[in-house]
Amino acid sequence: MAKKTTRKISSIKSFVLDSNILLHDPESLFQFQNNNVHIPVEVLEEIDNFKTEQTERGANARRVNRTLDGLFAQDPKKMRSGVELPGGGRLFVVINPMEARSPSMIRLQAQFPDFNKMDNRILASALYVNDTQPPPTVLVTKDIALRIKALSLGLRAEDYLTDKKNIITPENKYREVMIPEPLFGRFHNEGRVTVDYADAVDVNEYVLLVNEANPNHRAPCRHHGRGEFRKLIAPPFIQIPKGIVLKPRSYEQAFLMDAILDVNIPLVTVMGKAGTGKTIVSIGAALALLGRDDSPYDGLTISRPVVVMGKDIGALPGGIAEKLDPFLRPYYDALSVLLPSKRPNISGHEHQQAQALPANPDQWTRKDRKHLRKEKQKQQQNGQNGTTPPLKPWEVLQRLGILEIEALQFIRGRSIPRRIFLLDEAQQLTPHEAKTVITRMSEGSKIILMGDPQQIDNPFVDAQSNGLVYTQNKTRNQSLAASVKLMKGERSPLAEMAANLL
Image (cartoon, rainbow, N blue to C red; front, side):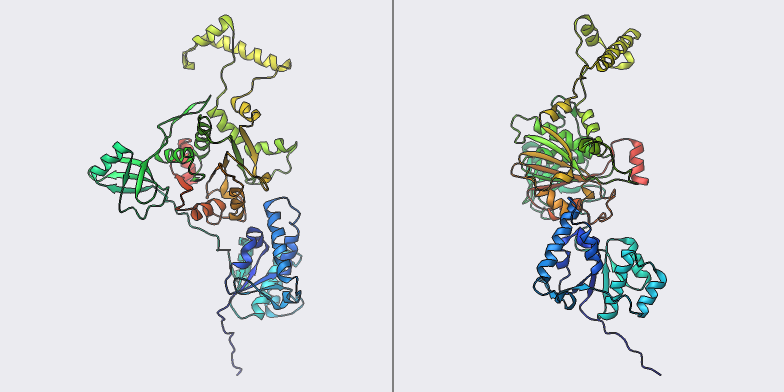
């Protein structure tokens, strides 16, 4: 009877990287410590397809090519024998002899016979490494389908875990700090109080101070470090210049206003489900800050990554502005609410009639409604006759350069001074893309990253590895950054129900 042989498990692992890992993080080659890293030659071919793109993915592809060229340029033979990595371990390029009739290849061809598919060829290379190197071998990919295929072949497969971060903000409420009644009274009188036992509270963390004698008495505040809590600088309501009065509907919205209105906090991260007021409160607070006489900012830029939800409708017609308009429409809607257009100017007796109209439309008479219909018809006729309709308030701001609304694709290489940069849908970014955007901010600028980690359409990130969560975790307890979580939906009872249940 033949003696059964077993392969000794090595302390050094062999990681086989898929192309989406390198495109997600070009530095991933150096993140596996003293283990061996294998790149299938098919991955190099896939990366080469993206090198001409003028996008973050294209920039990452070019960066990977430059890194590999620097590692292998002096001795190309080391592509097969391996080259030592600066942080430990060795890097190999896998050229799989697919004609080999090993049991693993036979099993692969039986399950996935189409070798014109790049995924199947990458699986073949991973199986080749598994057969020829001491175990364990791990295929690292962000493609869930490819991981399932690998598992069906008995091959271990994992997601890229290096940049995954847990969402550290509490899910249901903010931290509460109990203080004695004398300290609570001092806080109300002086606007600040120092507590010796607040070591666990981060700098710029928003908390609720609770009166020990009467727990129903609470006060929202921000921790400025070393146990010192101060009242919010955000007022009970803000008047948007030439716009509406905006009042926070919850503690967390007040926290968000406070973080934006404080010019000493240049980075704000905001998380919240749909309908919690992320966009409208952030834009409203930014406009109010711009309207101050002592504002250090020259304008507001609103941007977002262009990621399509659901099925793509194909190429959109028109120039850049027309192509981007569907993606930027939510911000025009928010601006229309914050900066509503005034009634058209009417002269003489008609002006007096317009001024006399009751504020409540339910109180208008039939004559009032008839008069307004005539005015609307005149405006339509003027438009048909070539008369330019009056600009909306936010369109005036755009004409003056105070307000910019643009897509994120064109930010690379820019340096943005003295502006408030509001980046929505930041959960669609990779950590590297988030870093790229934040490093565009010059001295005197403020950036606000907001989004919902549960609404991700980018196939290369998830709720734990996206740029918004990554930035929030990495900048925790820093004096230049503040983080806010919006929990309560304010859009409508229906939107709140859908966000919680669907």
